[in-house]
Image (cartoon, rainbow, N blue to C red; front, side, top):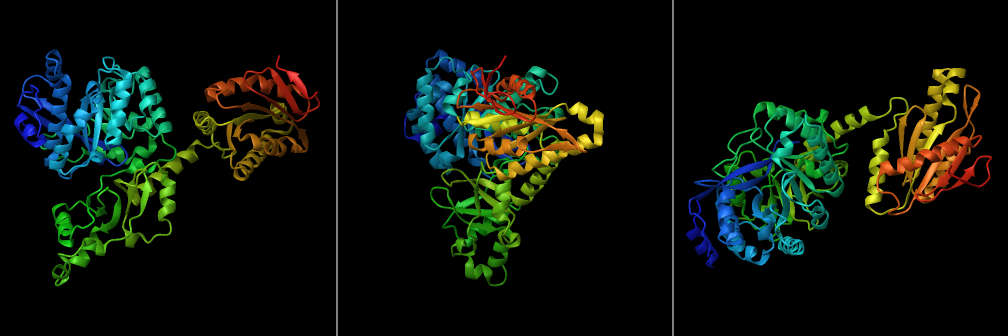
Length: 577
């Protein structure tokens, strides 16, 4: 238990708040739903009487809300000194406290110094109410805290009063879904839809998403399907008063995590999906200090030596290091010398890199020499954890199996989701692009005349031409929607080359001449808001293209009823009727 007196003595300042001294802290882990590893712990205040909300409500009535909250945050950091190993720490603060960043930083600094933590080790979870703070002051305060090195998360998404527009203004590092939403999974369609939308938002923005209050295996399975990669709840691990995580995952939960390949939503996982906490030590640590760390922590497979800024300098795989510094003379020769002498140049990769990029990084490396871990860094090259190559290899294999299952069995082309994601990516990046719809004219007649086998051969042939175009044109993505319908998204300077491959050629099925229709929509930045809108605008263009005799290509733009007939026997211009 940490008292007010302890905090005041450490901080060197009088906090002048009335907080009951009998507040202790429990610590609950956030676990990766891919690996089952704890990647962080959340500090939870536990007053002897009532709960944290009662404590803060009383402080608010006394006009001491911010000061009391700062006291609790500092004491949470001090209490975390008992953690072993020291995982990244999540500390809750109310939104009003974030509007007083200078005061918060002033009292967090000495608590960090005493525990040996850095600001980058702390994620500040901003909790409601948000409606009672000035929006501009909150945004400014969060910017100050981030500049100081702290991570920022928004808590209670789905049950608090956080305006969704604040997500776009701040761009938090992590958002946490409230337990009320999770309680509705997997049966409540409304809860399911909200979680699915937020998971999609996080995927596209690179924001990490955590689910709070996971209580059942069905909920965990559902979260895996939706691509939620962090979870917290009694099913996984309850809160520990000792600051550590004392129990392994229950076996049924471990099996769910192990088998999540069949339920995962992300087609190609990113490195951060496999993030594990790294054991770091100062770059000038001696061999004896590192050896003691390995001895005290049998589960550690390696140590990352970092500089004063937290950037990796060297890696020490457990087995090779212990072989080098133990034995009859090893300890005497090496104990007091720098451990870095036995280290390797670290293999590093950004957390937002794809798992395929990680495999490219290690593809030509001797795994036995460097070990099974790659150091994961942020944009400033600061170590944020490690990823195990063996887990990434398994994850990529599982993703490839999922992708293969999603391919059209006739053409081996992906479905419309591929084009959907690419269009939304281009819209988000404010890019100009062209979306096109291709189909075979009178395809039923082809089947009725020369048979289904010949019709299938024709579709396969078109699929091969489209796959070759995607390979040769860097800005082109293709999809087989089904039957004789194909979707394409491409760059403006590639649509003519693509049309030439599709329209300017003779198609036939068992000697029967066949024509195709290509409808294309040129979308300038901001002219469409979604894939759904683009596909809706394509529908009348497809009808116009099919009304032109022979193989045809028509082109238009959102907001215009002018249609250009670029291939076919009609005049060069027409209007959508």
